[in-house]
Length: 132
Image (cartoon, rainbow, N blue to C red; front, top):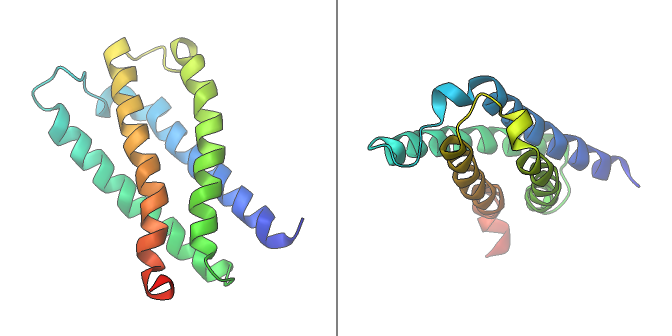
């Protein structure tokens, strides 16, 4: 394995770790029950913050890995690694998110699905000039 692949794996695990830690620490404050009237507004703000954070991480990664389509590689690897690790979190959600209600865990899952879509879309937006 080359150094760039290790960098990709490190960034992928780092993104997953910080996102998971954020919701473990702040989940009870930021995740609303999906039946709440403010759910979609709160979800929009969470996803906007996620998109900004992912764009920054991708920008930083692009500075460190200058190979062609580096951020696309990060998006694909990060999504694969993150989904695998998140399946463990969801399987053990009653222990990991013990302070959250089942509706808040569902809200986390909804956020997660959209966040992984962003994780795949943002790299293609950043590389659009190279792709066209």
